Length: 130
Image 1 (cartoon, rainbow, N blue to C red):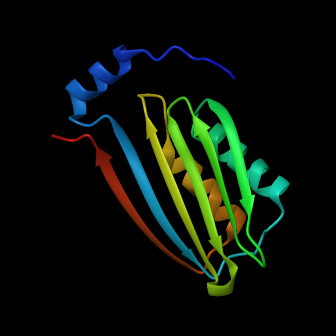
Image 2: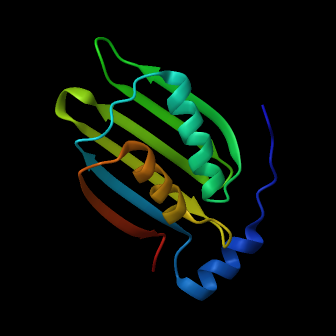
Image 3: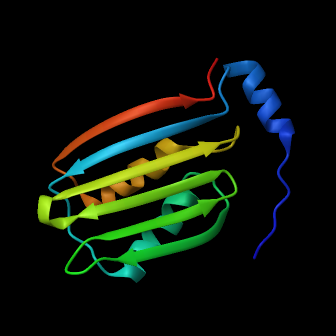
């Protein structure tokens, strides 16, 4: 397992300036391109993390029977998760990042290009906000 040192310096600076410790994007994608190959989902998660300037630590994918898939990439800055319900033409995306150099919006833009949803709903939450 890769061990990383977590610095509180960025958190103190970010918290002092913005009153939150991270950004959490919750996205609902409807009528998406169906992708159920675990290797493709893993590739998309890693690329989304790179687009957000995050540090990937570990990827875990689970394929359900008869269909559906969940994938999560653990990041030094938190996580990105994808949960697919092909029977409902629905994909749930969860992107939580922290740090001054993390760009969760860029990860979301990349995932929009990959899955090509026809309908999108996005909720943005400032986590740890006072």
